[in-house]
Image (tube, rainbow, N blue to C red; front, side):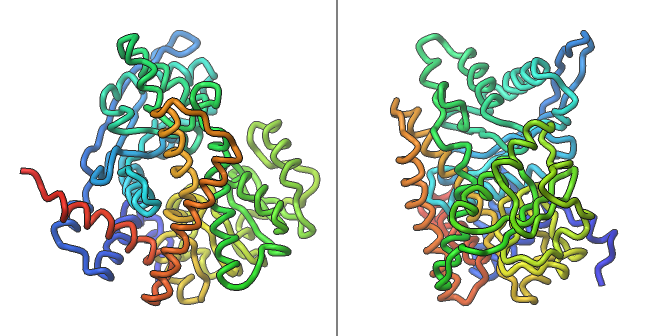
Length: 426
């Protein structure tokens, strides 16, 4: 029996390494490649001062972990959160390596962020913090080396500040050639139409394709969502448009339920007017947060932070399928319980890969001085995502593997091939 204390000791990096090692065993991964992929290539930690609005100087700590670039430049988000540390960042960077490889993109994996609560700072302070962090990272990022993107508590404005700061360090003739140093920028500053909804669209597509392969549709399926930020909101919007019913939402402030169905648009508008919180929404009943995972539903979408589904709550889950909108929401022990109970998981590296696929489109758009429109973006995204999903499904079916193992086998095998072909320098 696993105790509460033991559950708390399982870090995100332990989860990531556990998933990797299990797959490496299952696919008999080359021992040299296994050794390389266990460790990140680079771990960058920067401490930098910022002057706040009241004139005080505060020191901040920022991270950028570059896990692997065998397939191309490092790629991964930046998050602003008080709990972020180098351990979490290692795990998130490793997952990005698998995600970009799985999607067939010419990228590696990285992740980073700043240890802080952005709600405690004004917009002007956040701008100064972001610009100073960018300057501190220096040439550790770059459009052909390491390309950040939005993540938890960062957005298109954050990316615009980073791009502008980075471009300002270049000579006048080089500045516009470096606009693709980040993706997820505002459309007016080289961003991609539809990038804001791409991750949620991918979550929706993963569920649509899941039900299609089982001869069903989403119509009438009841789903619950943990997290109502960018991913949770857009996934819910697309699912409801396709006939599914959102019956419960949980965020950091409240857990809401309406068995007849929540209005996604009204809930989103309310949360925006309520400092990002769903608490107090009139068209739903508020329940205790511990009841959330046990709610009767067809689909569970964890779209908040990692390490949410553990041995403490996995036995409560009644959903028929779990779609991981967040990165690393299910720990090893929780997953073992779900597998034993016959509850399938569409893993994060597949389910939420719509965002990085769209980031690749934006990167190409900037590189080639093109403008892609929303309809074209969603069409290309659906085609790419569907191809990847079906490859994973084929591996899972032929090898009698769960979807996570199948996705990992496909992702890691591509990197293994790259190392075998290129060799090790010197």
